[in-house]
Image (cartoon, rainbow, N blue to C red; front, side, top):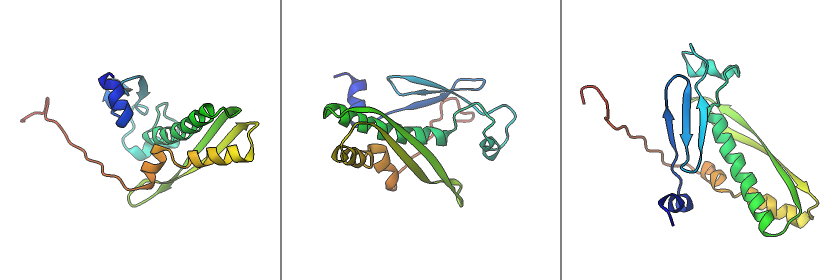
Length: 155
């Protein structure tokens, strides 16, 4: 098993880098996603919330992560059990909170497409409620931020 596959099995590592101009790269080890900083001239994070910038906002990535986890787990379960699943749509909306400004909640609406029985739909609903990202967001977690001194002046 390669080191990349080993790390994907137990935990994930993502590297986000600013590569100049307006580009951000999100490297998961298996794929790279290109993002863009908000429009030039923006001076405050509050200024980018009007929807006019072309970049993906971090909160949108969080919603996308949760939606991908929910839909992916449901699809894997349905496929492995031979369910007649035609598709899944997960719509997510953040609910903002203040003091401090943050995402205070997430409203999730899931549509399951296919000729599934009530029992199959109930099992998929149970799976959706227990994905890893959802479980992580439901419980306080430790976040540790450290800074290296490479290229730092005076260090």
